[in-house]
Image 1: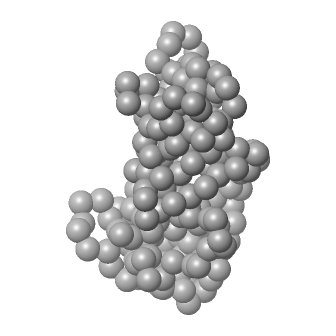
Image 2: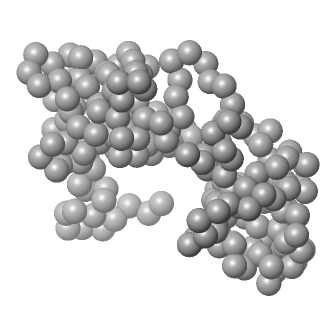
Length: 193
């Protein structure tokens, strides 16, 4: 399974540069001369590309890719992803996992006496200034946003496809309401992002 390291948002210069969302904790992925693969929408096979240069721009990165030398070359790349093969992923510290590896895992509440399975992890909302949130779909179809906090003593078992936390009492009721409000499932103005 390919790992996303950047998602191209739009052209960002006259010489084919593109603005991209950062999807890696390893900035060395964007060093001059690094190789990645360009995955365009609808294309089954990612194509190799060399990063000729990069620089940060606000919370994103500007990339200069080999063979992309004009605005017209860069325009079709909107929405494309830079990806790497599994064998090129960086080794992680013990107890850490890649987001794509925990998506699809069961979330288990070790603090409950009843049914410990909360639901299936669908996604992770990364928040640079605060704690990341696990997006979990419960068996009843409700969605919960659960803080992936060290205080909840996370245990990740990828072989068993399980992430376990010690959740505080009542957190599921609070976070189901917050998730519904933030995704527009209730009336009222949506928060600006």
